[in-house]
Image 1: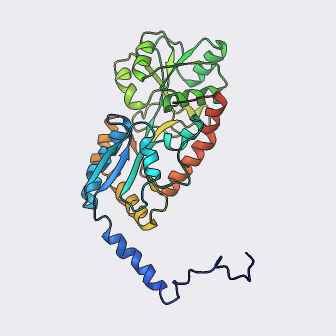
Image 2: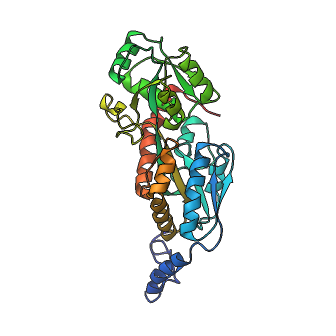
Image 3: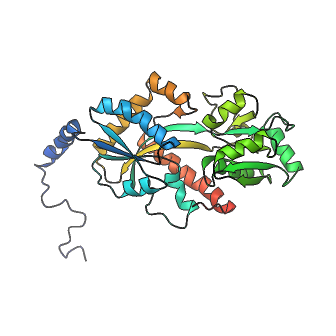
Length: 326
């Protein structure tokens, strides 16, 4: 259609007039004051997992602040994400999930959503660092020495991958790629068996999340060398970062909150403000730290930036390593 053919492309919709614009601008704050006025559904993964724990810890104080009930709706696997992507963009369906939301596309041949197009990022809520943990008998004191040992014994050191495609596995593959070492990943259906074998000395190292490894470090059955976050962790202030040896290294277990794409900006803003507010309370910070998780509370833009960075860096690691997950 040409410019002179009567097309409305580039024009305001015929019902929007200059006189009506002030009314539209004034309507958004009024609508924001009325939100929420019914139950909010918070979709997340299966009950008992890390995302479920995050969702429940956030939902209780958030419901108080919003003055509305929040129901945590557990769905196994990627079903929660699939359902959230197709839900009405009205602020009454939220998704609480980890980096699988934006990395699953690299682990499977296809997914039912587009992470950057089908969701409105609300906030990066929490983050759990992974820990470079070794059997105490391994003759290294730091990451630099671990890299040197691995290079002197190519293919002879094994590491626990845990669940294929989960943060501890991706952290291990990122370490291999960035350090240029040949360590062999050993997969497990769950992380428990991996801990058993590292503690027994049958496997030399692993990259578990903080909450899962703390009991083993406290009992000195395992020894920690470093954290995988760019900055030192509140949980392990005495530990150096891997990034001090491998600049730019970052591999952790983030947890984010999303709304369906198209959710009005004023609702996203309100949700961001209220969720960040509850995450910044000393009570909730302490609850998360007690299970090995650090609160974040980012802007939507910061969450988007994290997603894009992970997709570029970790997506390449996943492709190069040929990692495939169910």
